[in-house]
Amino acid sequence: MFIYSLSAAMAAMVTIPAFAYLFLPPRAHREEQWVDAADLAQIPLNTPQEVSYHMNKVDGWKVSSEKATAWVVKTANDKAIAFGPQCTHLGCAYHWDESTKTFLCPCHTSVFSVDGKVISGPAPRPLDRYAVKMNGTHLLIGPLQQEQG
Image (cartoon, rainbow, N blue to C red; front, top):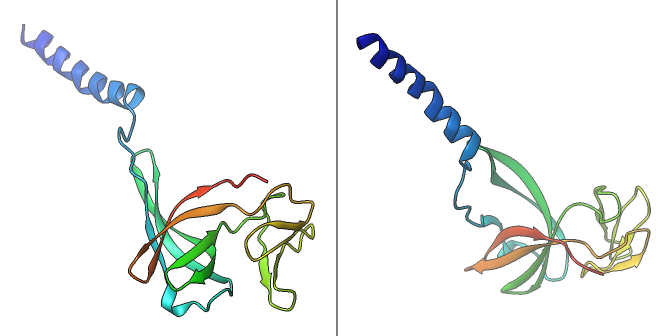
């Protein structure tokens, strides 16, 4: 009888974690993550600045911190727009060209205005924007939202 009990206990030790791994989601409730990305007091008005910040990435049960960037345009003392760092054509990195006052993707020559709208293609739609909210003078960045043309 002891052998049967021991065998059942060993089977349960293997079966219960395997069942949990295969059939239960790693995070039942996923909260929106808001990251403190920049102090708007340090950013000039209507001049895009590339800001770097760290955000936590959840992969199953593993949580890792990774560096991310966004282009932030301060539109008022307490308002800003944050753009994703990839061109909407093929995902290349773009930059702010101070001489033309536009965002320029050097790979395929897409040009965007300071508000993210396409000036010339081949980009099919405006730059993607992060959800943003303010905490005092600090800009909090949320999920990336795809803009539609």
